[in-house]
Image 1 (cartoon, rainbow, N blue to C red):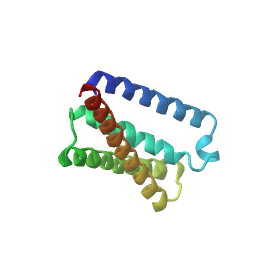
Image 2 (image 1 turned 120 degrees about the vertical axis):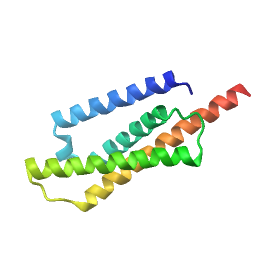
Image 3 (image 1 turned 180 degrees about the vertical axis):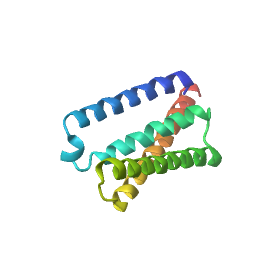
Image 4 (image 1 turned 30 degrees about the vertical axis):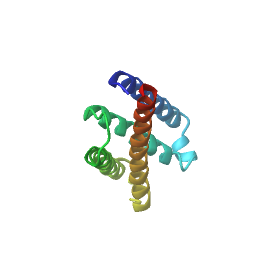
Length: 131
């Protein structure tokens, strides 16, 4: 898969996340649909995984490239959770929920793994078509 196709798909995913987040905020879905946070973190991990594939210019996967993506997604997931904790503490004063934090990081990680799987399947289909 070339960089332009990946970038187009990445822009689509980011736009979809933006639209879904806008609707969730507008219609209070985050408070009325308790599990909405999970697919949002999955999508966040997915687009971040695609960005890291693009950033590292990965053409084929090796253990090292997969590790870079997983570590990158987890690092950003942890940083996002720290950001959420700080914002929660300063604005809403909600109690810290370790289960929610672990769940969020798990879904970030799962989204990153899905990006790896998605991209590797794209590479495999291109190789099949050229053979």
